[in-house]
Length: 236
Image (tube, rainbow, N blue to C red):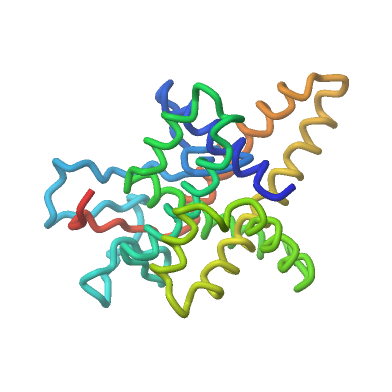
């Protein structure tokens, strides 16, 4: 079922964050959820400075003053970040019972603007990796994934918030989000298959752990391959 990978990634990220190991969300997010980028957007950073994720990157500028992040040549504003946040929260709220004692921490983490910036970075750079690997999804597969997501989360308040925020652009943005998730799921499936081959007769929990570690390393490598800059003049 679509979303299981996402959930695992989100919970994995929380664990890594709590122990100081930040990198992205693996069977669910990025945020560091096996979901994300190590971005310094703390409140004590001057609004006149910018955060660059690659020290060797050329100076990156933005065409619009409301741009919060630039990934290569693509600019994203706060609405783009909030759109991801609402869809992430819709899933976390739905999986409250499964998340158990981790739920409050998951929700708190996913509400933070910095987390959603990391999620957005993860979604886009891993989609880029998927394109390089030649992953392709049929229109039927995409529609099925959208229907599956909607069957679980469309009745939630945060899903409605995402719809209201995106307006007429909702379907296009939602489709992009779903394809990005499908790409991450495919990458994780590959990593799990590799872990199962390398560690035969191993418990499922250990396979997930190994796949999560490899996903984190892969995400970090992918961040290094992209020009990413976060502009700090936004409200937390």
